[in-house]
Image (cartoon, rainbow, N blue to C red; front, side, top):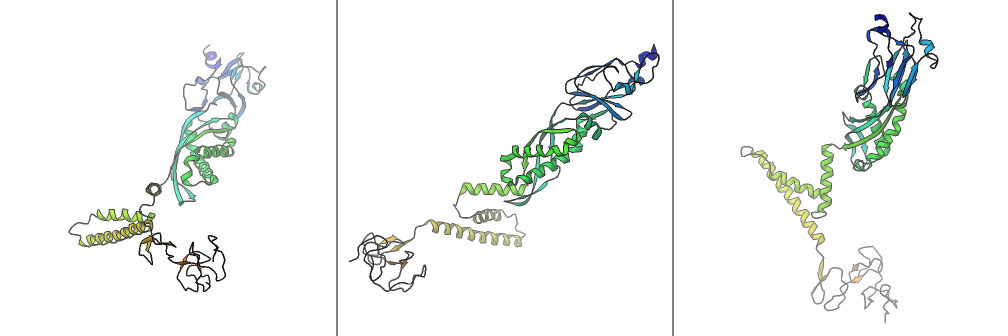
Length: 374
């Protein structure tokens, strides 16, 4: 009876209480073997794989099975010679967890190089989560699993995490998005990664799903540049161009020069740099103010201050200057050519009494305002 109890395994099942085991080999205590007419219980999200002499004999999905050669044909190959009236099955049973393993983390161990339309070559770092499952237990057992009694999630993730980073790098390259547009397209990039993963993971019996990009970060120097561009967009054109803004910042840094009293050379350089940048800043501000200040002239007759391109004085009504018949810019009386467009001018003293445009000698109407010329 001691020998009989040693050999008898009436129920074969795996009550999985963990969240990180993919494959579990059913233990054979004290050399016990599977008996004919034993019961096999396979729960939902499980698959039972029978291995005989190193080869996969059969795979069972969820359900309860009576192991006998009458209803399971492959058992006829596994039954050994009868020993004391009992037929024993010499095989190993592996339970494969086919559920989805959620919340697996990925991250770039080293920066990923990419070509950006705005910043050129830059380095990206990123992290996120993904999920996977065993889609084909037979293929997974042949390609990934060895002879260990337990195969955990950490073993697989460590092995194939670099493949995910490679797929992400390819997806970013295929998207042809700039670094500033990546954040608005995380979901689209993730879909590309999932689609491309089939070619890599299907042969292994695996399926990638729920790939999520939580963040793709730029290098510190690029982020600072983006922040400065944002500041300039808020400031507007108060002091001119981006170079003028940088000059103002440099002047502030020069004022904080830590060169002490003993370091006269450093102090001199700091003062010189600050003075030069101060001049650049002052010129920039002055130029910006001059561009905004309206240009005015004095009337040639009454000397009143009038807008720069006025053809008539609003105070006395006198004509201020003749205008080119082609470009309309003011010209001097008696000019043979327009100094603005090079148009050859006809020597005529005739001008439109209404708008002041110089007219041809035989002109009867003004080409600008339509005034009839007497």
